[in-house]
Length: 545
Image: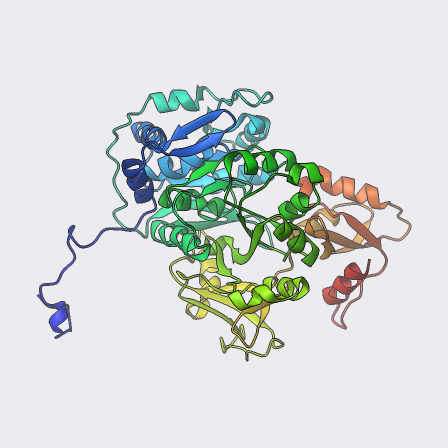
């Protein structure tokens, strides 16, 4: 039988069948690893250690229990949790029953989480005790009766029960030999992640099984990751599903070393005790480790690979980390690209360069992942690529399987993001002669602070609510610790008086604390002849502060 309109001999009687085609899904990774390496350690958390057979049993019980409650394809299961084993398990158990995992940023306020729960139409909410109060307030804001499942963590002294059932009791409803199936279509949604964007409510970014599968493998290829890596969870799993690393670690039959909070003493202790080989994080994590007391750094006698994304780490931090035997890889991506999809691929001949030159090269965002089909810097209107001169700026565009399906319930934003057959990042960059790209500015005025995206417009809208504020603008100010922090330029109403602390406290009372400005500068704001605030001048002032 020939394909319609084709006379090719290769289209005759050579059809897809169960023998030669299956839908891609990262869920297949845990099935394989549990069968081949059942006794190898899968998860470490304090004194808890579970092997891959035990972990596979638990995720199948979770899937079975959810299915038994009628949760399946197209249903959303939300999780608010730190990097603990249950969060890792949810990356497999939730999609195994066909549902969609919504791992929620624990740093958001109750109002934002309430919006997310309603927008995603969450059927169930699994909650870490550390965030019980936050979850309870968020559910109350939804106005809906969302069932809450409590994770009981014996190692966490605080928190309280807010749900009717515990996570372990939920697992007890399921069976370990649950016969889950791959998605009928690899295009089916596997997870939902929210990005604040630049205006209004968060946008829901939908991932599919195919993209998650490929980006998980892309992480292995990008890092030349051998079998059985020991991965430390310094990167939140709510960030783009931990940049797809829950699935990566399953594919590589590695070990997930979980931890509730990033503290330098705990991190260094785990690196030494568990012989950690890989970890990810924003530059602030590297900065904390580089400036830790010397006694904590002593005794590391093995190589550790570190992937960082966001603002490029300063040369001094790279030098300090590499002196400890840490090998830094700089990556770049967005929530819409499953996390990192661009990497500053290293060349052996660069090893002989001075640290300052190495840092300059490593600061570039780089080239596309092996699994990304297309990357270019181009004119945002014509999509004509810019010359490779390191000077001409354009917008960064992505194309490939590891680009989101689109924005949930937001067809206009999806259509705009994919105009011309490319994903429009909104980030401005140049392309160097060797084809490596380097970000120069963010057209959406997003501030990346400690790995978190902060919308300048969101902060400005809060400032404008203060009775003394006439006008306000937020720009990024370079910060050695956080990479960038919000800097507010404020013009006051005639006769009004307010201090920097007053405005910062006002913002902290009306939004997530990390979004509040760290600096406030008073005075008239520069404007164009049409009255538009000239943010590029404010950025220059912020850099000079």
